[in-house]
Length: 170
Image 1 (cartoon, rainbow, N blue to C red):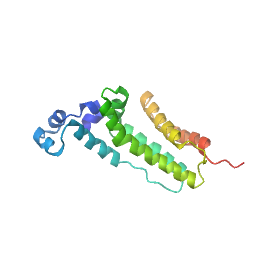
Image 2: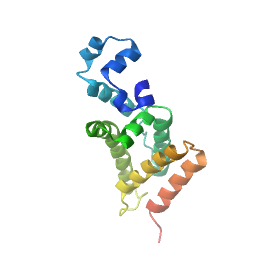
Image 3: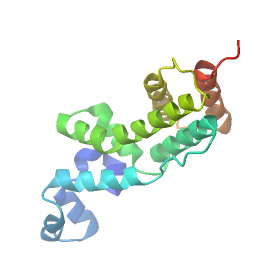
Image 4: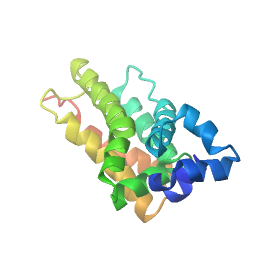
């Protein structure tokens, strides 16, 4: 995980993990067939942590989702994952990150917004897939240019999404 955080996904090799952990390469190979399997295991661990706990309020859940994204970027291995995606050197590596980490989390967020549509909190004609992309993009952009996520910024993202998506009383 430290290799992933500090140097990105390409640095997570069997040799590097063995050197960093003091565990023999043969021991690592007993559990993982190759470097991709080691990285996949690390990505699964990240994906299983910091999951959205839905409530009855889609806007509170969106705020929670933004905070979880921030946590992933700042405190976990998000830095290395982000580096792997933006450098895009290895297409198989990029696809692995998308498949194991990003898509499942995006699907959870989209499903939560669809539940908000069903509950009458989000407009039926809202493009929830694009809204999810916008929220992820906002957090990634903020991380890239400042790394500062104060409460007012989080509130402004949720307010903007609410203004765009909320059912309007005409």
